[in-house]
Length: 417
Ligand code: MN
Image 1 (cartoon, rainbow, N blue to C red):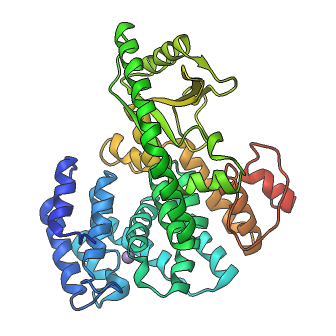
Image 2: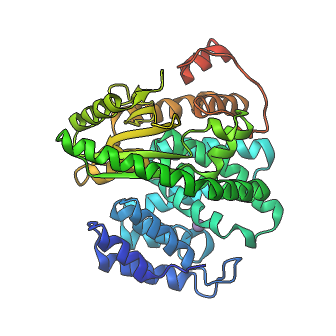
Image 3: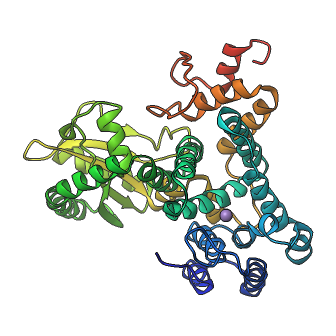
């Protein structure tokens, strides 16, 4: 296990040229280090490596200074004798509010169903208030998952289940695809270690053959794009994650041979125009699989995801999946709502309207619903585009595709709707 140091955090910040005052960062580090002095993680390391790992992840997501500082300080008020007031005095209201938000999310003593809905409710309130709190929580959770094996089995299972049910689902809804995949795979590994290993093995067996095949395809596409004067930045194979392969095999009952995107080809191009030109080149050369071309640029997914997708028959009759997008769409697909901090001008704290509207909708609704309603509403809303949820509560309500949380509210109580 690599222990993250303060230098690693600074390096992550420098590499990405983030506008972070390193003196203030240093101050935060020293405060956290002193406050956590003598504390150990369950894995035996000094505690400070955990908040540092959290801060490094936040820097990798290119978040802003208050978020990274709050990442370093996130466990200080709860676990040490340095108070929130002290943090406020030293680092200002914004950092203090973020730390407080994370602390509130962590302080949950409920069990079972009650704990679950209370947790969800707190996540929703935090998201609607300042979604950066939830980013810190994701980074915190990713590190906790990576050191999970040091905890008792019961606790491991609880954290992993909660990660799948709540964190990964929310990351998905916020369009944070890369973060969702990481959360899911780590949780899957803890919950079903044998199946996880099976998937590892299966993918390792398939990968060399698929990679070779894709490489040949990639080379022909590259020269075709050059011939047609279509600009492109990058072409590479993207491996499907263990958990999503396992889900397709078990929940959807697919055969391995029916999963065509174990490795999909990803094409990154400079402009939207180049996306469509690339697609045209692909379809002129290879026969498209009927019904598989999707234009998520003209019609983005609910979570803001944009790309062109298609699947074509390769010369040997096998299917190749292709995703075409600009760099900006790519960053949006990986980091979702978090990518906005990178693209927006300094000072702007609100994400785009679509996300904000959804967050507000959920914040409003959660005030009016009972825990039971909230639980079902959240499941419905969060898992609308998912195959299944490992939730303790089994009600299924049949709503048309594209139904919103408001439709659901009408369904439960017409007065709420
Ligand atoms: Mn923590």
